[in-house]
Image (tube, rainbow, N blue to C red; front, top):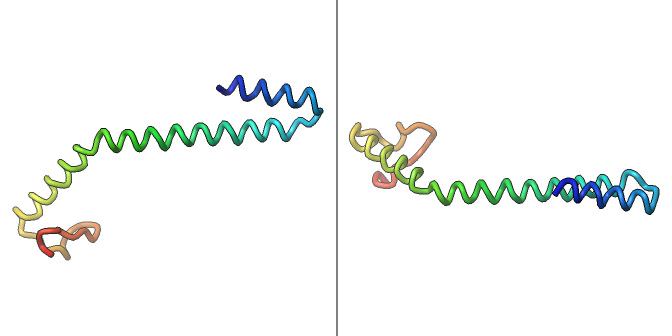
Length: 84
């Protein structure tokens, strides 16, 4: 945790009298830990909600085919797989 990282950095500071290196190292470890958790949770969220993205894509394709749009008329340059 943050308290453990800070405590270890302070202990190194007390032993070496170097205030910057241990605290910067603790900050880097904390940043890496937070980003690993953030990326992991984002991937878990995408995996758990994949059915929502599939449903939305299916609904968009159904609407496109019902309106008779061509691939060039799709927003964002999307291409309808059935039209290829």
